[in-house]
Length: 220
Image 1 (cartoon, one colour):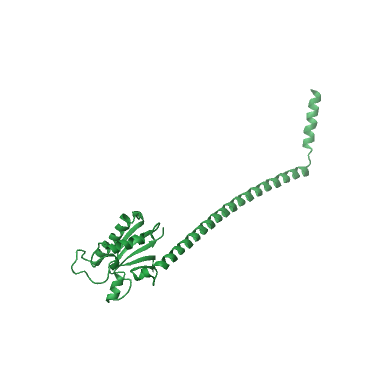
Image 2: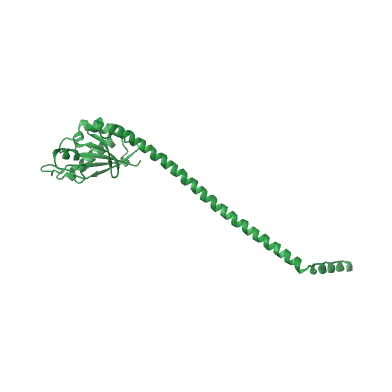
């Protein structure tokens, strides 16, 4: 027991004899280690943030590439339609023309192709024309717009050109949905009467061009 106490005393004495310099070295080394650990943690956070930024950039580039491919595909489709229905084509001469509008391209169908004067009942030629156009409208959203000339209605059940334009747009819409099979949720309707003429003028030629139905091609 006596020897044990002596050894314990010697050990405590040795521990108490560590020099201040050695103690400072230990403290400094510990501080340096703590700083290094903090630096590694900061670097890890920076790397994680950079990884998130790069992932977001890759996602954005993928989206842009997909958008570019979609835009190119739509341009090719429009080019094909213009080749068939553009100005100067046989279809345009027959009263069906693809024209640019402020909202995009639209099929412009002469009123005389679709309806008898002052009527909203489709002619047989009108039905045939719409059936052919329906094949070009697959997968698209469209807005069917009715237009008239500027001659006021004198004696008609419609009362106004605006009402007649809406009725004609509805007749075309009903045919596209019920007969041609277009999904109803992809077709909307508008009537503008004489207020959005295709051409200016009040002669017979201008009025004939202004009596029309336009099928505006919207994004799919």
